[in-house]
Length: 141
Image (tube, rainbow, N blue to C red):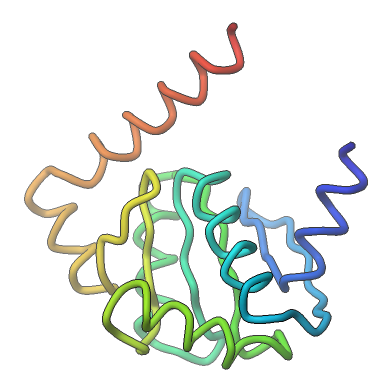
């Protein structure tokens, strides 16, 4: 089962950051399969950043979570042959095509400045903690 999960993550160019580990690869997907992969990534992780490796704002978002010592999952769209397709689907989902597209606890919270603002308002960590507590209670069952 763990191998299947690793292969699925590799198939969508998923990078998991637990302060250092990463996976990357890509395969062709139908739009429906790509949308399903995106939804699955979002629902399986407390923090997801759809990103590009050269984007300054993406780096800013990642640095924020790293400074908070919060694990996140980054999908590097420029390292994935499906990246443009993912961006199209994310645009339909969120109303914007720019990166980063940051999701916390299954909810789109915005880009880097939106995420930073949530943190400054004291609203980001409670969202993350809510997700982590929910996941912990699910694993305790």
